Image 1: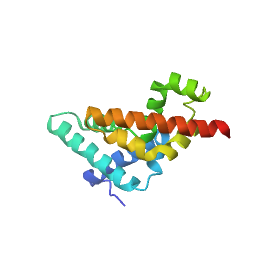
Image 2: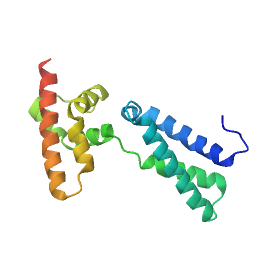
Image 3: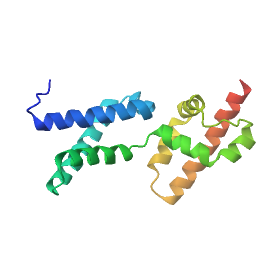
Length: 153
């Protein structure tokens, strides 16, 4: 248990709890991932590093903690977010190709994510324009195939 007098532990608990709550509310796919604890520890450490930088810059402690947490939360993207944004960007084509209009419903996006996780990851990790184009094409094809199979059921 973290003692209240241990400022470092208190700050770590503050950041970890804030991040965990945010992920629970907004990124269930990250909570359910196998490496969740590792990812949570990395995000917590990022927040602490930001806090220390703000603190050294002379920012008030509470303000530094709030700003560090906010910046960390704003930096979080999940495969679900990437896929949902991709689907919305390509909604016209996908609706035309599959006949499904409500493409951004959570259960549909989650089903598509399960079927296309590797391709979403490839898009997320793409570093060159060629890689991005290739990953976009592969994801568009995969999403279309998954939606067509959903539409048949």
